[in-house]
Length: 164
Picture 1 (cartoon, one colour):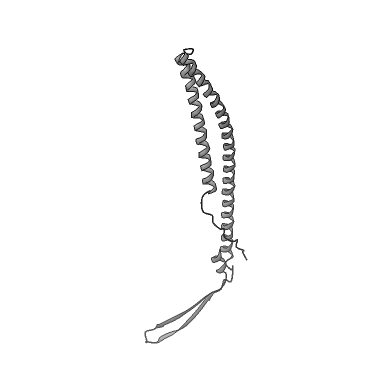
Picture 2 (spheres, rainbow, N blue to C red):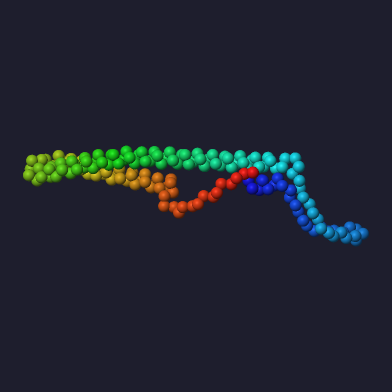
């Protein structure tokens, strides 16, 4: 944008020129030239740069809005997973108690082997469900950290430029 704005002003060039012809006449001296943006003042290129800047700003805003929406969705999913985790933990406590009672009944001969294994498998399945939920929670937290840039060094934003 700066280059396009500066191109609307005259470009002044200083230099040295020299030469000779067939008669051995030599010319040597200073040269000054400048361009005048008479007709458009480079307004077309300035407009293109402004439009590009506006488009980049809109793309940035769209990506920022998308990231905010994704973080919101992930936070909702984390809340749902936390509710599931509480429910599974309560079921796991009941399953542990039932498994311990089944083990005592199996040792005393009041419960057959197949029923005892069913109680133990139910408890193990609840533990696996709890582990899967906790893994999903960790994955969501990592995804949020990646989207928000958590843990990255902070950067200072550049001040906004004013356009003439």
